Amino acid sequence: MLEYIFAVLEWCKVVIFLGGKDKRVLFKEGEIWWCSIGMNVGVEVYGKGRKFERPVLILKKFDNNFFFGVPITSQIKRGDWYASVRFADKMVTAVLSQARTFDARRLNERMGELPDNHFREIKQAFFHLIETPENDEPADMAGIEESIRP
Image 1 (spheres, rainbow, N blue to C red):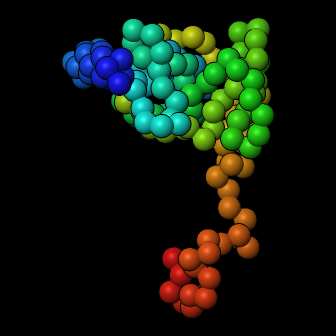
Image 2: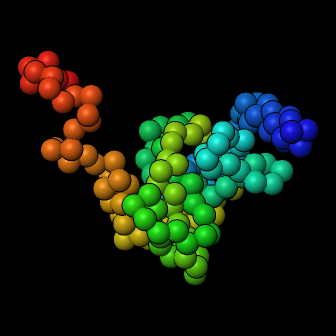
């Protein structure tokens, strides 16, 4: 438990540093960056090393300060929650289930950019993951009048 507390304190130092960053980086969709993801809870992907970093693919840029990203791992994983592509002469896996929004101040160093076809593959896999078939409605909606459903 003491080791965890020390790790949280180290992450707090990184948060203070990130919050004080004035200079913004230029980034775009399809790029992979070292990103200070930080300490998270339970099965959430966490960063490693002194800056609590992990590679993140920029899936959608909302503005110069904010984006939707997908953590990347060098471990090859299979299943609907993952999409593997070649990047920098090796296979990497996008952890689709861990996609979330990030402030651009978390971006530390650009690793490179995915080729358009690989970027499209990951986007399609993500859309497939979140797509809900029309006849697959949640159980709590069963029996509710059609007129009052959202």
